[in-house]
Image (spheres, rainbow, N blue to C red):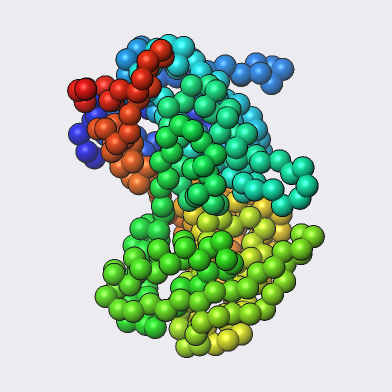
Length: 340
């Protein structure tokens, strides 16, 4: 545990208590006291129980839907707390959102389509947030362009490198991007894995075409035969993309197939789909707990990696001056305690 930081408050909403405990432990502090009230008609209230005037404040809420609260409900709770902290004269408010809601809808694919990423950005900014911190969004450029406030984008590939390097050492390895959108993410992981193992790591790309909700495409560019294959993506929802890529790699002679994804949503028939796929191991982070996975084949192959220390490091860096704060009626100024 590292020494506690001065001048910082970290509020953790109830839905993210597990991840919040991990972040607090890595920071060497306790979560700031917060009253969270549920009303019988479904309304809710959150109230900070400590004075935040002039302080550097962080609010942690991962925005996945679960049986207790929908993603929309969690977003609303986050927005209300940000506004309450701004009203209480916090010097800077940062939304820490390890899994960001609506990040997949970042461009128009049909006439009059919505741009949900941009709309969420407008809501967060209108509540007074100075910055948003998130991890492995679907499209980093689109996410950053949607926000006018500061964005801190974290990458989980270092966590996956630490997990894969010991079991891949001494073997021929190929990193596979399951679609065009994952190429940069897979490349960053490949470079990290190569540096960690001290050996060259191959790369490959799987074709994926989506039309009317159906996936197609059977082209795989790259050599995977007699290799341990690592498929890298930002999230697993239905599991179809990962499963079909695993099948393609196995059919071309891959020895072992590992799947990596930062956010494990496991929606719909993901449990059955992944159980039938030729996957040896599956790795996700705890931005989303795997509560939808029943105990069985997939759960036995699954390893959940904690991102608490990674988020804590980002908060620590931000607090010591990585980005500026906003005053209510004036220009941006350095964070509390950092001078002019």
